[in-house]
Image (cartoon, rainbow, N blue to C red; front, side):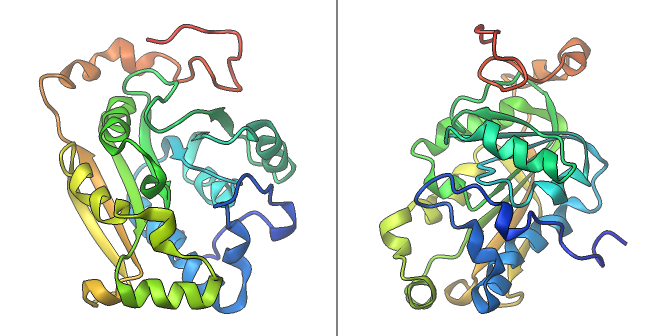
Length: 250
């Protein structure tokens, strides 16, 4: 069964460092790594009952989780603000993972409307300056029948203190109040299908990670995305490594 097998992650020696807050190597440390990998396990549990299809990871970083996403997709895409898409794609190909990666922000995704069956974003939305713009874009590129899986870190003085002891990093300095705003902003554009926590059955003060599987809220503005022609169109547009010469946006 998919949930019983080991997580498929890039080897630590293959990771491309893409920026100051790219701490993918933490996933492989003895204690911290156990905690960090729970994010991926929560995501995998929420993806498990969904059919395979076109998958986009927003904030893919060094691509550590893309081998796992590859096993759940018919075609795999990624968007991130860093300029190392080609280097990460090359590493993924070495590990038999074909991914179409674009340098793009969550607020301006270079893909056509209703392009994807599944969107995944893990510990990324809390870094996005314009959460409203990002949520509008996520809803735009997601098929009306699709799902969005989001994993965000918990926020409390106790959690932040423990995290700082383990890593030396200050979550409050990195995130500000973004962790608290992610959920309420998402719920303006999506409805919760299922929610998981790690550890399970704990209160907010001890919740390290919260994972949501969401469905788009269909409004008059998004109803047109169900047009069959839009679904049939290939998803990649400008700014994608798969189509570098197309400089027109929809």
